[in-house]
Image: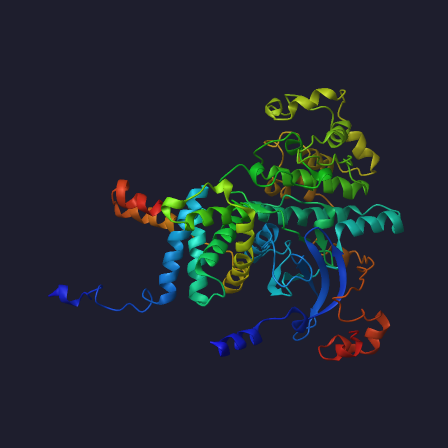
Length: 384
Length: 167
């Protein structure tokens, strides 16, 4: 028995011996994400998501595996699609769960910020269209498999250096087929407030895949204007009471106009409909908004309006959106927009933290010593 | 005669079913069902918890924690997998009450925090063990659904046999 235990301990995968952690990418409530590459095998780039260890330094966990990790691992293991981030391996080490995933050089948020701060010009229509199409393609795949993403936003949309979209962060995603209780009962608040659909803002207990399409609509709009279309002020939760997101609703009706019963027959049945009375009346200004972005495609406007339809029943589905005339029009969407358009964006900036093995090798250095990316030679750079 | 070819199940030693780990697993399944029932978990979650128990004992039959702790850990994981999550404290309190002898059962609400806090570390260690055993494979098949379908196909009476599959 003791022998067996020793043998198993030997076989246990240690994240640091299997992968070289090149740099720290970002962190969130869930934990931290690192860029890494395997120490053996082909020199590919990977992302490692390290879920927060329960309490740093403690020998034993105190809260158990988080539900978000459980969902993300459970779902990602089953999903394989070119527009969804792929999960390679899950490793338990150092009392934390590590998910080893595909690495994508950019995310949509960083690309849009680069356009605002450095290029100072909008994204080209071909790029917008290609990204939108791939995003819809990924979302349609999720919906066809009865999965709601529930946190679509630019920061969660990964893009590889050639321009392939990978929908990431499935920590809030869940299977919606045959829910035992209403979806509301599981997670009271879903989707980042700027991308939250009106039915969620009005406290709907049941919701559908349409909430993801609203988010996609907001992201589409953001790509056109390079700023969030509905940038509302979030009302913070107080005393565990879920507040009515007054600011967000106001931003939406300023652009889309006050919803009528004609536009959204079920609106009066929404639990928080009572709050709608406090707003002044607005007419729809989406067309003006669209014209102001400088984009001219009429079908593009139609697609945007059908994604931002107040009525979740009428809102376009991801599968239908893929067939929209907008995508049949020139310029047609392509698979690798950055590659074809010869666009390059600055790479992710990596920082180092205590977990990182080596300094990211400077570009010229890598050229001078082509095998510096090969396993084994990396020990030269190690700062331990 | 044909009857002679049928092995006498009661006298024959069954390699798998009589394995000590499987006996523990079977006992754990009963325990988990009782706890889960008292908490109002749906059949789907109970089935998944039992599946996890079996999978764990098949792959790694020597858990570092007591079998009841491992069973609770399985229920806790199943609750997360089936989107019917409950606080670990509540699960611990219910299983504590369930482990008391029939006459001495106290109200779940009155289980002191000190008791559940004491149970927590080994249940969580159990959870890690389960994760290792199943290799983070959260795929499940629900045996009770298949059972009901087969029962329907075979035309067995719904009232007793088929209903047993669900309960």
